[in-house]
Image (cartoon, rainbow, N blue to C red):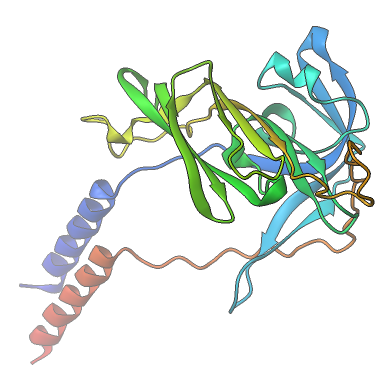
Length: 288
């Protein structure tokens, strides 16, 4: 076998490897923090002022370091996931919001922030997709939501969601689980401390990858809409223990040092590395 033939075989192997690699695609998501300035129900939008963008740096060792950094714009406007947002978010409320396809434009997750002090922040309300909000829920609660696809109603990488499996976790332990069809409500108040969790699955999408014949497709990620409300334990996050005292919204925290985001270096696919090894053996054999 001459060298030209060896190179031809190598190219063919690499092309084959690239062709059989699973395809994937995702639309950019941008998460910001700021304060609501203009809830505009007639235009179905909500404007957030003094936005700070969420980002992470990746040191050589250890966990990623994530923080918010000021943006060079006074405000961002986007459409809301549901009109119910206007009964939850008011002017001046501190929020975390995630948009799809760039900063602003379309909010796919909106979360109201409350906390015990300016050094802490937690989420009490979410309108949109909980998976897009990096801030923890108040009261040491957490949610795990998974949508189930209707494989007869798919387009590309997403399908209409038949239902959503919702797990409520307390201190990392699952304490309640239900499968919700669209527009159904889940409630949990089993901790005997005055706290409660309410989750409504409004509507959603699910990944089509579990449907027959739809693996390896390229397209947008699935996005769903939930309404989440958490009532914290009695006395949680309050400066005094007066009965009925309301939580005080946190002011926006300004982060003055921008995180340095570094991309992790990618490696060649294992099959391609193997192909290079085969070529090396062929060349070495010819030189004997």
